[in-house]
Image: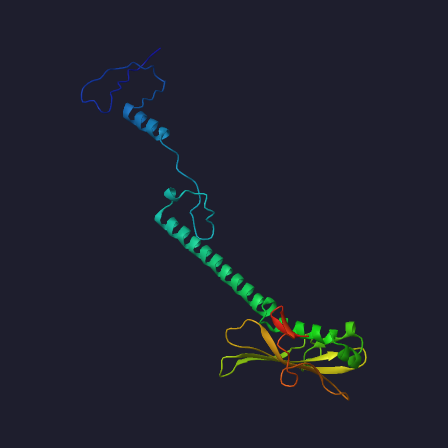
Length: 237
């Protein structure tokens, strides 16, 4: 069988490195050492990360800050600043609502407290019950509005201070018993430096009957020990 001699010389050698007899028809490949070495280094290096780029909308905080690029750090800073602003806005709104609720409902200076105290006085007065009807059925409500479907009727009231820095509060509303209706007017005041409201007057007008005064500081002077404080108001015996 005939054979041929194939002379294989290394590519980087300037001199004859060696010869190899290869039978005719056989194939042979030789990989130089440098290329094999490069392949080994490539396989041994750390794999490239495949995570998504961090943006303002998809950042969940799981990626460590040190692993972020400059652009990703800017996106996270923007997101956290926005979240902080939302939290602070929520706290301010919550505090404002709490203050408004206290001022309008629970404070002794609120219109609601003044209204409820006056209604309690009216329901407990025997003269008013006789004029309007049964005491437990007496209801109080504001003035009617142009919208007849509106269930809530506003209570007319006013706050002001006079020249002596005395605070005044006036209110006007309606009452209705089992037999008649009436109109209530009240005026309370609080002098500078005092914490309790005092009645100037509180009366009920029922059509066809004389005015019923529950409080009238101008008509009925009190004895020094004939009044007492309760729930921020001064009551008369």
